[in-house]
Length: 151
Image (cartoon, rainbow, N blue to C red; front, side):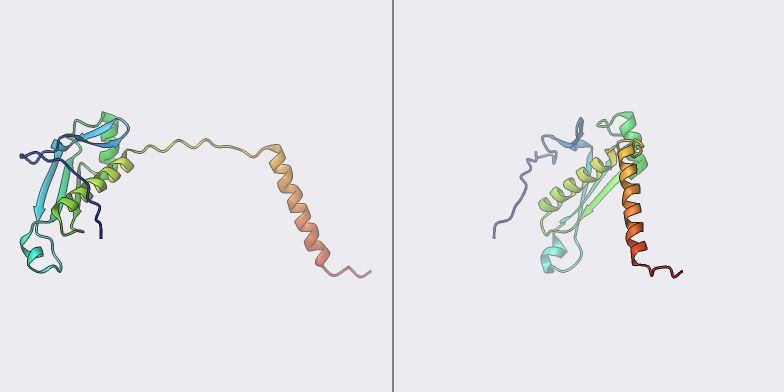
């Protein structure tokens, strides 16, 4: 069975060679990401007990150079001053690191998203007339089902 593994280029110092694209105009330098690896709990025998596969990513939003002041306020309001992602889904440290980056990008992108303001609208005259006509038709249908009045 073929497994999809995202290729990441790492330098000897543990620093990747590029930034993480988050949203249009926002790229987080990988040097701002703090990583910590620990043993993952759960089943897995000797591998789980010895290998540090659990990945914990932390990013300080307050000190980041990747955000504009308004973006920083929005992220801190929605996610807090420090964003923390913990992944121990896979048995591979590299895969858990990739999953943590993906989840970080998704969470940060949703925090940066700005909803378009709602513009209140009102129904057109034709829509009002169609609604009233339908109500009259429905009323007439129900009236036709009633017993005729006896005189």
